[in-house]
Length: 109
Image (tube, rainbow, N blue to C red; front, side):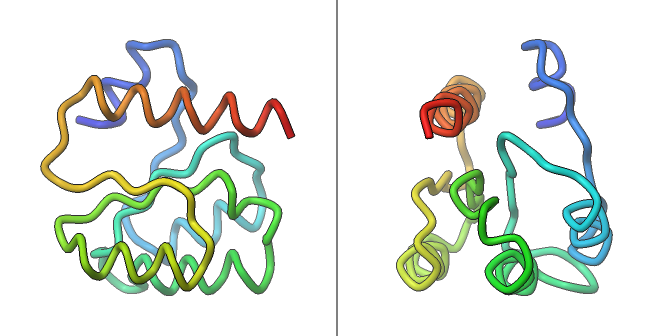
């Protein structure tokens, strides 16, 4: 659903089914915004954050953590300097605003 909504808003979307696939894509591509769910199969969102911190720190400011576990997401944000959290459930307007905000912040850096 997130993929379809963002594509309708004109964004080019590259989705990953799990954390392992996300890391493979992050190793090869740059992104303006990274929507990251903490609960994923094979490698969870914390593993992806670890990968980014160690291998692609320049992408850290592009991360928007999505999670139903707000305390866990808040802890992850504090520990890894993540600026944006998107608690689940979220409405689509908030999602789009967060992605737009990430893109604007990256463009200004």
